[in-house]
Length: 82
Image 1 (cartoon, rainbow, N blue to C red):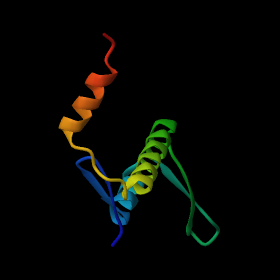
Image 2 (cartoon, helix red, strand yellow):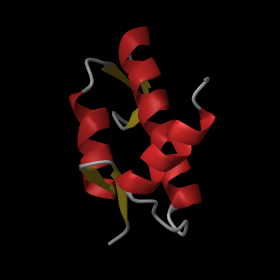
Image 3 (cartoon, one colour):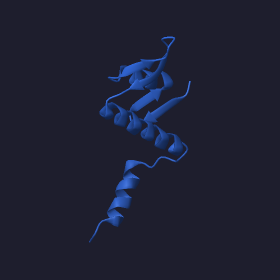
């Protein structure tokens, strides 16, 4: 099972499907009654886009070596204006 992680939050494909399913939208159906499209409030749509972007960033960066907090603090101190 593929899993995406953003900070302390992990998403599986099932989780993402649930997010879409619980969005406050309406489905449009074809002549056979099969769902063919969804109409979402703009706020829900924008949140889904933001979540998708976050997951793409996580996927791109998953092979990067983590940097510990102490190293980040050292780097920030070196950059700080005098």
